[in-house]
Image 1 (cartoon, rainbow over the protein chains, first blue to last red):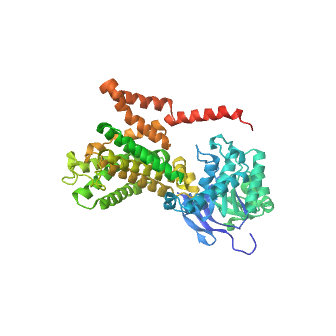
Image 2 (image 1 turned 180 degrees about the vertical axis):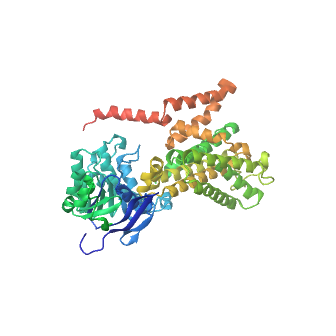
Image 3 (image 1 turned 135 degrees about the vertical axis):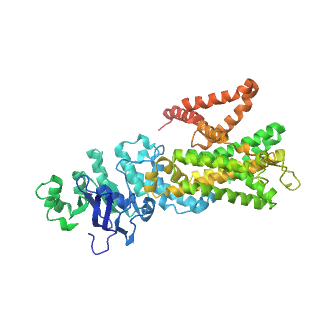
Length: 268
Length: 317
């Protein structure tokens, strides 16, 4: 938690069912401004569903997702992006046939506030916004270290570079929160280190980061706090060092047959 | 300022060409300019925004019929006829677009095709109002400061419609809206995550390009002062589609190039091969699709890229 101030993002009683399966069960957690929060759990624990609920790709059956007190549960993804929550995709989703720079400009869509009539009239406001967008895109390309590829077709990027592009594209919307969907997946150790530094840099600018991640070697040194899910419910919430020693977490990961999440059932 | 000079120069030059032509060639030239106008708009809808919609020619017809019916059948002033025609077209386009935004590819194609067919049926059964199969004739524009707007004197109006369409499309394409359209075409899921309202973007593009087609149709109505259903038949939408594909899908210059080439080809080869000219047309279409997937504009791009590469090593770093 971050000091006494109200958390930036407050998830409360979030529930999502698929038929008879409760993928996310009465989940509550908070994210402070500038905080790096990891969301982990065994396969099928409900991490991706939670991610999709926050990003608006899925609507919850119950619960609220409040950003600075305003509920955004069930809003469509583009409305969520406009409120200041941008995401990356686990399987990079660059816009093909465009340059790196153009891709990042698309990430800035929600900040282009002038209407189509100003575009058609070519008003100075429209031109200023366009120039500012191009300048900001160039900054972000430098920030993630793709400076030499600014005008390259995205098809020529490596997978790791594609992940950096996704990161810069999410930042182009000037978000309050960036959601990372398994950002380390498919990256080399060197690329992981690089991305880890970039994520710390993002949090350093006061932007909150929510990561879902499998790779513990990547997540544990990076996250300030970790929320652990198992069977859709929260079984632990704390600093990485505490989480690693938590018997319920160890049991969930190792599949201890005797004490399956015993003693934490009331946590959910 | 330089921009204004360029557009003005294009208006004067393209209009002046008309005065040097025989009346037969003039009519073809005016129709060519209108086909190019349609191609530019359709390219934005199909090539850039990725909507496989077959109603573009139908809206061309709606514009033509709307202005003629409002002005000459209902006796409204011409300005009201034009504004009313634009409003009717935009409204109809919105009525087609809003329920169909959830449809993609094949299904959008079917709905718009059905709409185009429905329009032809309506025109053929419209009684006195549409003139049914005979269409409407015997109307005409009032003189413009004592100049009758017929023949070559009408060319500037058509050129103006072409350049206005081009200017609107270029402005949109070179803005965040154009990028959003391409993003929606390439990956709607990612576009939505970037804050783009996918459905709204699709509706705006459809209504806007359909209305531009309707305005071109209004200009068409006064080329011969005659309109009838066959002019807006379904096969013309496929001609338009071939023009875009052959020129280079998604490219403005490609759309114009494709329109000029495919429109002219029938008149150029007909004297040589007589009634077999559709065969030549078909051959060209098939060859380009097979061997030039990026269209004719792709060939030009390759030449430019090769030149640049050849020039690069000689440059001092």
